[in-house]
Length: 329
Image (cartoon, rainbow, N blue to C red; front, side):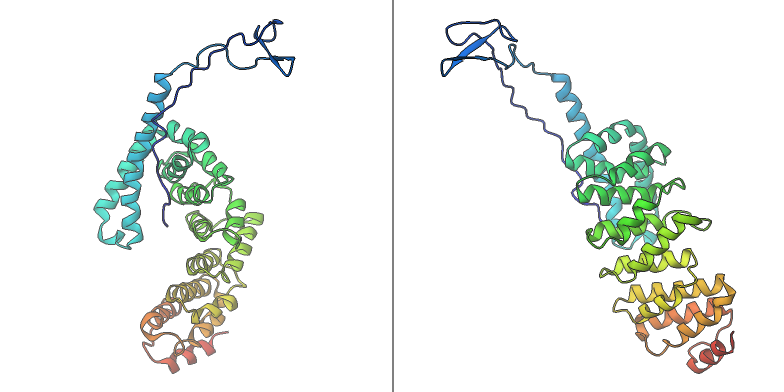
């Protein structure tokens, strides 16, 4: 997922105003600062500073150092992001591993600084820190990242979700993420990254309210206008083996996006493979679309999914697949 507006070096130029207090007017009443002036014939207490505002070179140095650290981490994350977005990760594993190792080292080294930037830094530094902390492999990053989901800036929230998806902490609280995933009023980068974050978690043994929250959100996501959100919704329902999802997923087998159609096919086959009582329903749903889906983009994936679920191979023979499916209970 894209990392947006990642960096800006915190203000390095400062205007230092020397505000000098003094007695203005004709008389002094010994006000709060010992000074007073006359305004419209009435004494007005002078509330301004009475000493020069000092120039703090250490503060300038600290802010400059934070900006430089954030800039270097941003540079590495952009390179990492380009590989992932281009879909070349499998062809460039050595460079990807090197980038991730570099990010992990630099983020761990500057963990305290990045948490501080995430919570109190300027907008662009919050955006960088939100994504960067996910590379830390540090459980201390979980709290600040979950807290960043309440940030007023959408890009900070989206990057915090990306950070959570890379952190992969089994302690992640899923309720807020599930709500963002299904909230169509949120921008697509938030919805899509929320789905990515949920899919990064170990959900197999999830039970009770958290499981229900994700299933409800994933079902709603199947109707999202954004293809990536529909893909995440499909795969989440498969991961949680939602026994009521096959009919909903079948509607996506003819989706205008081949990615969505393939995700729906894979999800139906997984549900049928894990829950043997649903194998017949899953097989019939898939075989009904063999000759109705895009032959080049989807049909092969659908037949591969059928073969893995059935543990038999009828190749391209649609009639044989249909006969097989209808013999199942």
